[in-house]
Image (tube, rainbow, N blue to C red; front, top):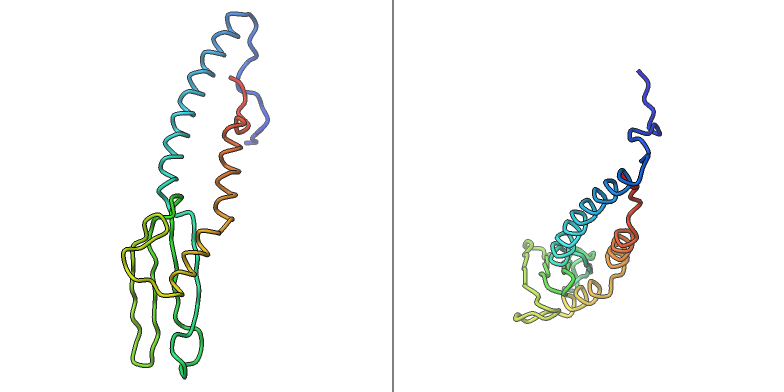
Length: 144
C-alpha cells in the first residue's frame, strides 16, 4: 500500500453556497483555535521560561566549582532559586521563593547572580515571540 501525502482529500467548492459553507467552517475553526491559543498563552505565562545557573566554590581549600545556584522563573520573574552547597562533610540544598525578582529570604551573591542571569536570558523569550508571531500569522492553516 502506498501513501500519497499530497493527495487532496476535499473537493474544491463549486458554487457560492459551498464557498460560504467553507467560510463558516473556517470561522468556527479559527474561533476554536483563538480560544485554545489564549488558554495556552495564559498557561505559558506561569510556566518556567527563564533559567539562570552559576557554579562556584564558596569555601577556599575545597577544589572545584561543585556548588551551584539555579534560578527558575516565569514570565513575571517569579519562581524559585535552588542552591546546592558542597563541603567535605556533605552537601546541603536550599530553596527560596522569588516573587517579581525579589525574595523574602536573604539571598547570597551567587543566588542574586543566578536570578539576574535568568531575568536577562533571551532564548526562551525569543522562542515565545516566534511562537506568538507564527500563531498570529495563521500558522500555515489551509482553507477548508
